[in-house]
Length: 344
Image 1 (tube, rainbow, N blue to C red):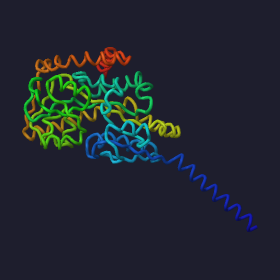
Image 2 (image 1 turned 180 degrees about the vertical axis):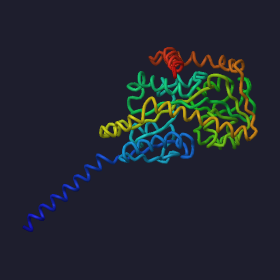
Image 3 (image 1 turned 90 degrees about the horizontal axis):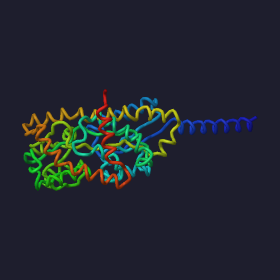
Image 4 (image 1 turned 120 degrees about the vertical axis):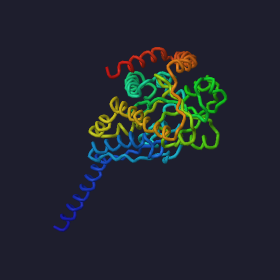
């Protein structure tokens, strides 16, 4: 009798351990999300945390999203995409332009004076990703969202109204095409990650930077320079972002948890993310106004001079895309068409 109870007890214990292990594997998933900005910056606070909290809630807390800001898992911002591919992180948020030329089709939204509205561009970006990029340029990673920020502009230590005013200035640029634009105006592009901008400005390493208004808050840019140049109509530039997930990690999820991820990803999320970034421009701009900074808003006629200066970048980009077997002009036309159709 004692032998029977011992055997049954051992069997029950083994079953309990097995059920516990199975339950843990089936129910508890931890995703490490890695990105380069401090946690108080707008994107982590207003986009990434919102997404992560929603995923956790919708999963009944079966998915836990650990947040690692400021490159806390190691490496440098240009390495984030490879970290997602290699599984160093499960999810990354990054600037696509940190790896120039690697995802060429995304650059259509980074062309100078291409984008007017961040929501429209983010919507078009997702649709074109789904059609052209998902199974080609991004085949090694599972993309959760694609978006752009609000209008990029100039923040400088001297007033800038014309391309000629840029001559000799050292300006931090955020992407390959932004740097080409700076060179076209006679400025010297300086490559540096976003978190390094304040030190670069305060030490005179750079004379200014190209970023949207919303980024200036966390970096205190309006306290470091006194001049800001805005453009009428379409933005001087925008950068493209992705929220990317390790493909194997996504595929390893049970179907119901995949659905949680899917339901919080895609077109609607991309528009939310781009729109949220753009909405943060206004409060950030007001800081510069309150400081008494010089905000130059160029007229349509003044902006047209800049557009004409930027035209060679379009021509070179189309030729470059064609050389890669991608119809660059077709991408431009499709992007414009989708952006124009947004909300109609």
